[in-house]
Length: 145
Image (cartoon, rainbow, N blue to C red; front, side):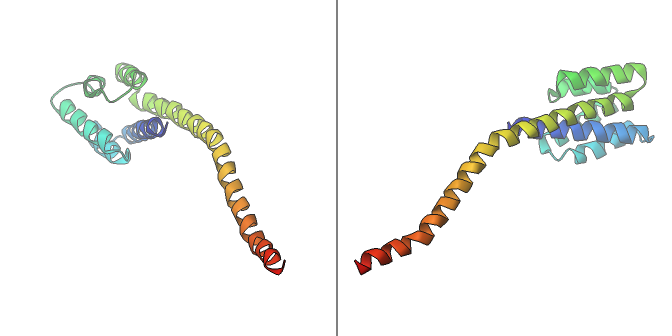
């Protein structure tokens, strides 16, 4: 579950950064450099640098992304649609919104899964403190008897 969470967070950061920098008028290759650093994931950073090299050789963004086998089909399709329609920044921002919503739901599910374990750990800690407080009293009662 943590792997999926980190993967989707990296993809969301990539989409958000690429959409924002491309919308600001930055060239695609420079936007990919910044997006690679923003992912926070070495695997995606290296993949984005490979994508940049493919684009410099004349490949399209969606084709270069498909060749790395790092990105889910939804991101690939949104990228292809954005390139075809001339609204790449809008499609990247929309992809980022979708992945950020997925991250929010994953974190909510994860917190619901962790609640019973947290309660058990707190119960053990409180029980240990109670035993630690009353054990000397019981020992004192045995010593006097």
